[in-house]
Length: 215
Image 1 (cartoon, one colour):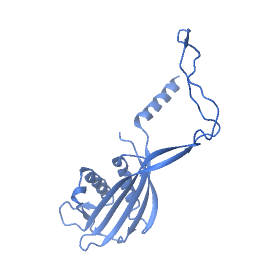
Image 2 (cartoon, one colour):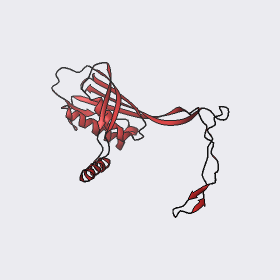
Image 3 (cartoon, helix red, strand yellow):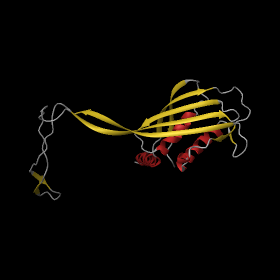
Image 4 (tube, helix red, strand yellow):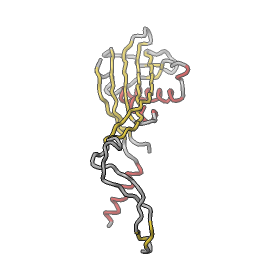
């Protein structure tokens, strides 16, 4: 009994903590990254005014954290050696889903009266249902159609030399899920963009990032 109580408590704790989520993205990288770079200071390029939202700035902070992990330094108003650009889009994609219906029967629901025992053992009438194991291909199609909403996201990050604008690093991350919330997915997309930095030049990879649930 004690062992069962411990197991039940562990299962309950697991439900409370939630489950990790794995985000899969397609990452394409092009770069001419120098073997040695002494100054890794940078500033973000100013986005168009209509794009400079609080959401955009929060994603900039995600990129800033990844750059700091790789040894880059935010120049914060000083004279930077590099400039960093970021763009992202989210597109809703309705997808028609066709699911087959079993060809062996076509449920036909209708009223049914019959005896049923109540909680005190008395008989009482009830309104139930019946169906016929009869399938008529001319009565209804053998499939059903529904619309599933998917969301396609694209994240682009570029790094250039501030002195002459020479491009050093371009990465594009594509991800399609049924997750409606872009903020829930963006941390994984940013991590995927810098996975194995600078990565293979001209190569496309499938990157998986596991996000732990918020505590």
